[in-house]
Amino acid sequence: MKYIPLSNDLFTLNRANLRKKLKPNSVVVIRANDILPTNADGTVPFVQNSHLFYLTGIDQEETIFLMAPDFPDEKMREILFLRETNEEIAVWEGHKFTKEEGKELSGIENIKWNHEFEKIFYTILAESENIYLYGNEHIRNATKVETANDKLVKWCMSRYPLYNYERLAPILYDLRCIKSKEEVKAISHACEITEKGFRKVLELIRPGVWEYEVEAEYAYDFLRNRSRGFAYEPIIAGGGNSCVLHYIDNNRQLKDGDVLLMDVGAEYGNYNADMTRTIPVNGKFTKRQRQVYDAVLRVKNQATDMLTPGNAIPEYHKAVGDLMTKELLELGLIDKTDIKNEDPDWPAYKKYFMHGTSHHLGLDVHDYASVYKKFAPGMIFTVEPGIYIPAEGIGIRIEDDILITKTGHDNLMKNIPIHAEEIEDLMNGN
Image 1 (tube, rainbow, N blue to C red):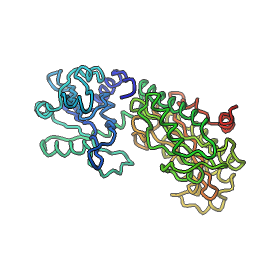
Image 2 (image 1 turned 135 degrees about the vertical axis):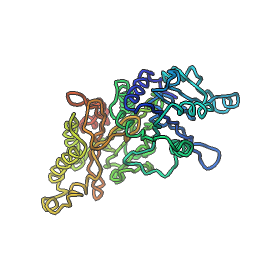
Image 3 (image 1 turned 90 degrees about the vertical axis):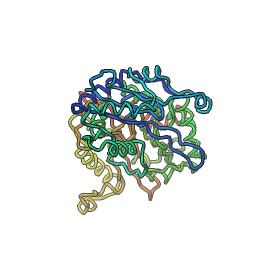
Image 4 (image 1 turned 180 degrees about the horizontal axis):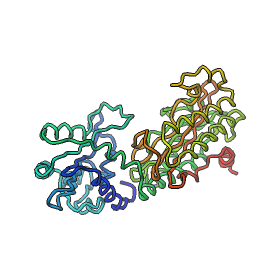
């Protein structure tokens, strides 16, 4: 890992919060993600199960966490199972965590090698009634891959069919949507790294530069600041590409007179930033580009003001839609007849702003919580309205990361240039 390890106080607190949510005589078991193969003998870079990391701080494959808060032997109530190393592994793969390092990173006293798991699990089950297992219940999950935890669920329910099984996902989702001070600090640092990359990129961009060169500049600056790299596949979209919501080819040359939409974010310590900025390739917005930009920024600012305790996603998105409708009327993109004849399930504004405005952010870029859960202090949301006009080759999206506080909100990206004049000045060396 490139980052400085987070305090194990964070993971100790997370486990304590989980314990409070469990039924009596329960056991929790969750395991690391698999290392995924390529076609031959290669592998995809390892990405840890974010729930395992949330509970242990361990960023290594073949890790298992077991919790049994009511087990009679106190030493067996929290156990971390690590991959046991040997000389061959050390030569070919490098260092793996020792038991002492596992204890230091996680705050868990009882560290075992993972080949001991089945025997110890069986012992603990003798005093347990409920088994909590994790399945991916994210509302946008569409994967067809059988994960390591999917396989664990199948194995456990087949081997021990007479226990009462409980869903771990709803509990973790509810806990993870409220960020602790340590988590906010990590996400804020990811935002700071993202800011450094953006400011460097403003010095690079001009007509003739290629989208992939911009991507490379971000990658360089993220890595040199101890980030693993991009929090998600970066969108570097010039001209008409800016109207493609998930454009990731990043292989076109930037042209004079175009806008460049950049949806990027750095990762730090597995926590993520998510930023979008749209800038003029030649350093000066055209009159029309500026009209659209200012409209999006107004919606973004007003939407940010609605990210306060007590609001909720359905009402919030409807209110943002009303704001966008007014701006599109002013821009001449829709008229009153379009609004009068609109489908309530797909309002007129959706022709030019077809995605949601906000999502939770944390260890996962699209982090967890019910869409109906009321906004509360400690939640972190993106706010990212956009207007996309393919006929004009103009796509504008602006995005910041917002922490909800007891009295309102705090913009974690407040130091990243956002106003059109500031961006133009920086691009022109002023």
